[in-house]
Amino acid sequence: MAKDTSETRTDLEHVLAALEAGTVRQVQRLVGALHPAETAHLLEALPTAQRRIVFDLVPEGDQGEVLVELTDDVRASLVEGMEASKLVAASEDLDLDDLADFVGGLPEAVTAQVLHSLSQRDRDRLNAVLSYPEDSAGGIMNPETIAVRADVTLEVVMRYLRMLAYLPDKTAAIFVVDRNDRYMGALHVSRLLTRDPASVVGDVMDEDFPPIPASMTDTEVAREFKDRDLVAAPVVDERGQLIGQITVDDVVDVISEQADEDIRRLAGLAEEDDMFAPVFTSARRRAVWLGINVATAFLAASVVGAFRPTLDQVVVLAVLMPVVASMGGIAGNQVVTLMVRGLALGRIEDSNARWLLAKEIGVALINGTGWAVVAALGTRLFTDDWVVGAIVGAALVVNLLTAAITGFAVPLALTKLRIDPALAGTVVLTTVTDCVGFAAFLSLGTLFLT
Image (cartoon, rainbow, N blue to C red; front, side, top):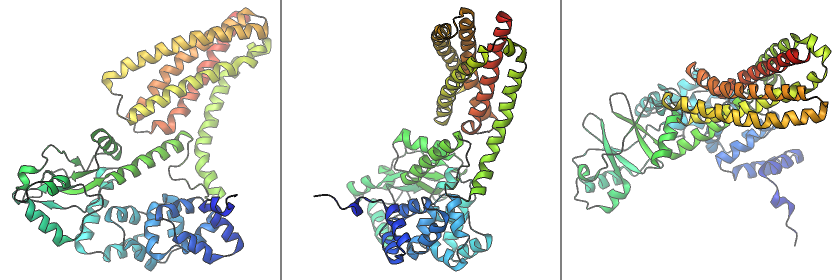
């Protein structure tokens, strides 16, 4: 029996069909059945006009969590049309770490109202998170933690937890502090539940469970979680005092956001560009890197223009120029990609950089020589001229070596200049390989054919 086609539709198709049919209640029912993260994904896939309609149908108790899950641009477009009272209501049930992300994009007057609605304790905790950069451990931490002293028994800890009747999400350990709130170690929940209740916390806690400094970048935090297989980790300030914790769901968000950023930056797009933003908004954002590309293209064209007399005499050189440029561009992009990934993972340092450069030069020599022979033979068949084939082959070797050195050096230089190599690396690389490739090819052509 054939499956009902309505069952195979995606949430997006269901919602668009219901909107087109004008059945608002059906849309409300569909959206109400989704998890906030699924609703956010749905909203990001909708054009701006339908997006506002669907968001207004999200249950009020879920609107805050949905807004937190959205990208900055989409969230800003929805917040812009909301009343201050609704924004305050949307923030009420959010965890403090999510609330920190949420209030960062609100108007100052609304932020003041949100802060005023919190207890003094939560307000202090939220301000602690907001005082750190968004891309630091302090900026992504949850300030809600449970801490105990080392001189109490496990039985006392259990009574304390029952009295609280609440544990922060993803709690895998209770942190141990001294009388000045300085971090001492972690009491894993597994030990709390399995050890003798009369045992003292100081005797069973894990003293080899290092904390994460609040100043550590979120990239380094993600690496720590990966290397140490962490589920949760304490965060301490510069004095060693416990100020919060980071859990694995925070790290998953960081990894997801960084992957998305890298994909966008490789294309020269804004980090949080809304796919369905207005035409002129998207055009303005993309124009910057297109303009830079035009400038670099004219630079490459000026190199070609300098050899115009040669091209007028030997027209076949103009036909073969793209071969040299494209091979250099592809080889260089391979190196840039490896370098950006290595820098992001912390695998490239001054101590191993020279060895890596030598390795990339060796790879370029092997590939350059091999493909130079192939290109020379192909050119010989195409032009019936061994000299032109030899020129193409020699230019390929030169350009692949240039691509290897440039692809290695540019990401390192941009990183030292605090410029994202994923965003600017390919632009610089393409300019260098085009200019060097054209110059080498046409210089050899001028020398041997004119």
